[in-house]
Picture 1 (tube, rainbow, N blue to C red):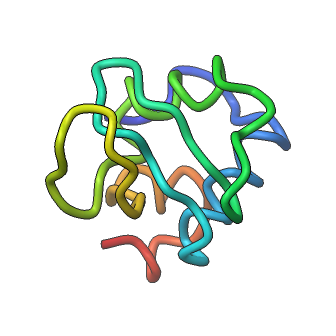
Picture 2 (spheres, one colour):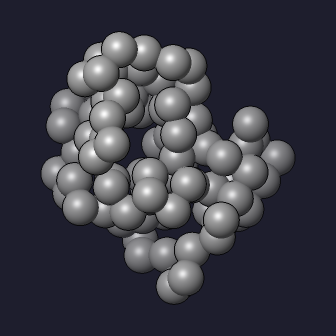
Length: 86
């Protein structure tokens, strides 16, 4: 899935942080993101990126557990870093 709008600077920054391996995501239907161990300041944007399948869990986990986040191919393309997307 690709974004239905131009990505904001904040969305791009989050996607770049995911690509850099600095982000964890909670295993949830409304996943939260943690960047460098701190809660993302804009969970609405975190939810949008997850629901648009730009950011996903790198591995399975229990409900509520934090696991590494990874970009999807669409997330990498949207952020202009397709070579780094998994």
